[in-house]
Image 1 (tube, helix red, strand yellow):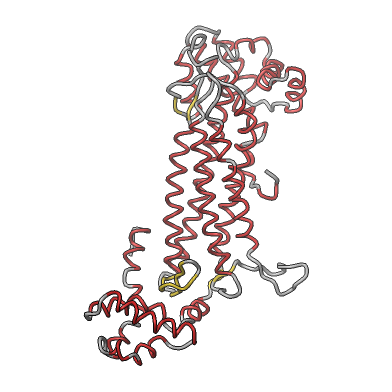
Image 2 (cartoon, helix red, strand yellow):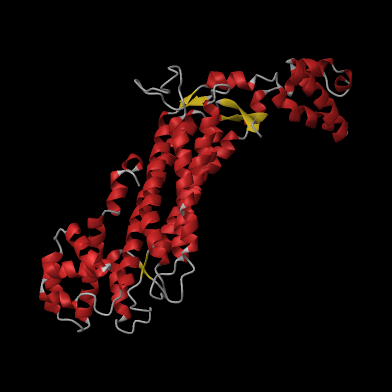
Length: 435
């Protein structure tokens, strides 16, 4: 991923030096266990750690070797031998390249998941703070983009909080599913390496043992991991899209923070555009787009092929780096979001009280009118209000058929705004565990 959409901590996981360090640790831990089993000399295992534990691997040298060998793991092992010396012949005993590559990818994705979970935690904290701030700030709810009934802006943010709490649970599950180790040899039979080596490496690298591998860890695990990232990205886009709509000039109920010196347009100096949330929409598309090839990687030939390899070399870093950036950016948007209660009130009152139509409908049915009659009475007054910009309550009071069922005082009671918010505490308690 390009630096523009990258953050250093996540990028560091995917740097060549970090990858080679994990490769070395896997090989060295495996050699330790082989030494305990008497397969290799204990002195050799100790020498491998002593000479390479703090080494900086020469990435350019490894690349140089690979240009000849056309094999990245062999290139690394050759370079490791240059560092360690003769004892390096005891490295990689009974192992295959995928043992190193797949276990390394599991470590990297697990570490990436830890960062993403922390990102979501920061977003949840921002959402909770702003939701509490606007718990009772009234605004119009919309269905199909059209005014429906009142909600509060705090409820909008509480809904997002609940959504990202589910995202967090999904990431925790995805991390657990991807964090497995395979050190099982050429086709997964342990013919040339004891299963206890796998268990030893898994424990040292913070992974679980893969119950059954072929030459590779089964790719359904990876498909689920990247699909989860795609779902999280979709949730990012949903909230970003909501903010973009609220920032439209005709709505203008909320707005991305516009910093001093910021410019919105090269041509129109007045512009204040939702550039961050538009950017988030695009980044979410990228992350989702990486889920499909991960699913297509599941169907490998027999015990393995390498059709998955090129895909994962790209989507591993790109998907995690992009989502990390997107979550951090969204947290910043929510933290600094400009919220305009006065404009919310203006929009709420724009249709002359039509958002109370359902309550009047229900009151008429309680007063003895059929649902069909009640709907017709309310709708004809609503349409008159809609089309002529009149006051809904005034029109209802002037309607003799409505008046035959409901008094003026009863109608006025139907327009109490607090009625719509009487269960806000209940919803907040469900989401946040408090009143």
